[in-house]
Image 1 (cartoon, rainbow, N blue to C red):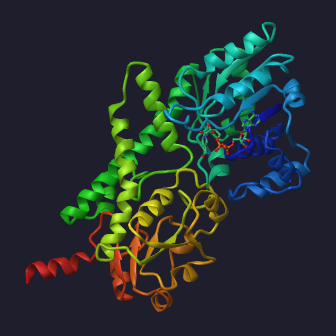
Image 2: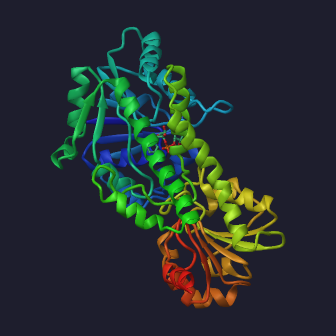
Image 3: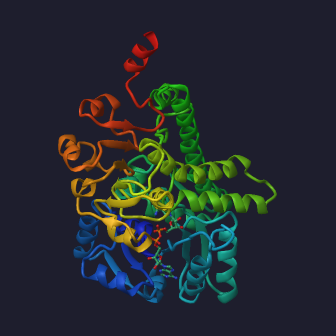
Length: 447
Ligand SMILES: NC(=O)c1ccc[n+]([C@@H]2O[C@H](COP(=O)([O-])OP(=O)(O)OC[C@H]3O[C@@H](n4cnc5c(N)ncnc54)[C@H](O)[C@@H]3O)[C@@H](O)[C@H]2O)c1
């Protein structure tokens, strides 16, 4: 089959490369000529494990090409995917659909034979209706079906997620479109990935509801973590204790510094707005957003408390800046709010991230960027684990203790245990767990 992928970002590039790997002929189109030129030279503009190899192989085998103009690829395509960005609209938090609508208007002019126009971008319920209207208005004669095919891949494990999805959602009532989509995804269907066929509006809402639910789950455990800290319980054991219940499940129950990233914050916000417009406000989600916002700044107060309450003239070293490991994506990373709040409290900041520093420098300045965890920790009064990259999971604490001004570790991802760190002579704070081992507390209580 012939596929045109409009938008070659985290979703478009991975989806396009994976479809090519299935054997389809794919052209990835992007307005960003620098990005397209880099891809044509074989350079990958984002950090995503395995992507360079996948893209390289499919270019060499002649199934994956890149372009800055969509005309040629759309004319030949069986399916045109819209995978452009849908960021938060400045000022009101609605999804900014201007890129989607602009792409739809351009696609309209190039449609030849029957073409499926599939929205992969995350869009509010009803957006498919508007895309259809835009195309129909420009091309009353065109033979096409607008469908919703939301994407659920996660940055950092995007290729695996795309090739082994929990489900594929296809929102359409058009039989021809349904046949084409089932042919396109056939390689996955053979792997027994379920395809959920549903209405277009329902498909659009499935994507937003999934992200909203996951954001709620994270926020729930973050609040329980706060309660654990105050009440002397251990949130990781609570999470395990509830997660083993199959109705709840163990995933997304890791307490941390609040959710961020390119999707959850903007999608939750856009769903809140769209629900209000439909007269069905989502109070739970509104609260989730408010709790999460406060939490990110609260992490700075946690750092301050670990250093006796005052951060003036103190140096804080941050390990990890991206919103999660294995990506260079800095969009809405909790580290941004944390850094602002630490600065407001008077701290000097040093930071290191294995892949995200180039992106971080575009959004966070006036901090010292370092080239490794140990140089980052030099003369620091506290070391903070912000993102749980693998390389931070086995740090050399003897070495850290030598270079730091004070041996204080604040672990916002709970990757270490208090007992271990206490053995190395560190003062250790984590999320939703006692700062000192339970046994010490029990002993003290018994005395
Ligand atoms: N990033 C994720 O993990 C993820 C996961 C699932 C869904 N999504 C959704 O997928 C969509 C894309 O997200 P992303 O992270 O890939 O965005 P991105 O910003 O990385 O990429 C979007 C690309 O679209 C290009 N573009 C914009 N208008 C264009 C046009 N008219 N023609 C051609 N190219 C155009 C931009 O230059 C950019 O390269 C969003 O709606 C997002 O919510 C993202």
